[in-house]
Image (cartoon, rainbow, N blue to C red):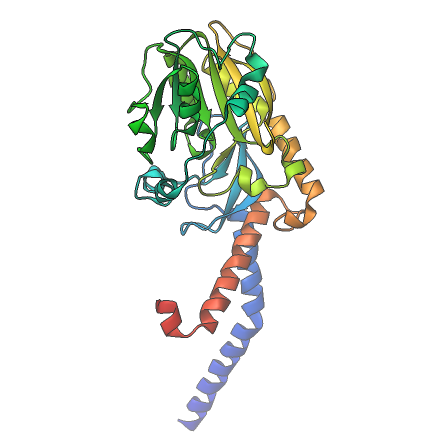
Length: 351
């Protein structure tokens, strides 16, 4: 018996030593496998707007619980950039409802007046065709995501008949007509999408609906965060992030999407006095409209310029492919989280 006991202890001790010796090897194998096969839950393989093929362009961090690092992905067909994975429809509904995080914020906002001078500056590039300050009798405008109604107030003061849609706040509809959805028939001379398209996951569906609602020769105003000049203003997180601003657009992408919906872009430029804003004006036209053939190229170039101008903002080892960079950052964040949890007392973690 003593011999067997000694033998058992020797075997156990040897096995323990082997486990300790091979622990770094096992960890390296797991790390390598994670780098090769990393896939955040809900990762999209196709564009949410047009269904085109997707390319991952950069890692993207997230505060959502389902993943820590995903991707800034781009569509090779229409050229949009999007947070990948995107928030689910339930998450979006919760965020933009009147009681949601975004909806509550909108209730607390102060009224933002749009001055006559700013209104004139926004539409100056098409003033020869659309005199926004002197509309014809009965001219109608629809503002999607009208918020507190600042834009509609300015247009109403110039004689426009004003309509709006906004699920997050009803403040504007004490003064303007509310619609629950975009009409299917051509009723409007002007439509406004002022900082709306970066919040949605179905921009082409919205634009196509407006293509039916705007009369031939009518205009569409779009304003979005200025991706084209992100290297200059330096605020990539304003252009795209995992929540709220989940899509980003170059001028080429907006031109592609607008053409698909029956609008021809006639102007694209910075917002008046605001380098972070891109303003696009498009005219409703029939017929086959020209679409950019390499719509993603300008967004790729904008991201490359941003990384060159702001190297400290680049996440993860730049020499690795994008998926491996995201996997590396995900592991790094997971290890930091485990270390933090281990250092906290149980009562603190429970809170």
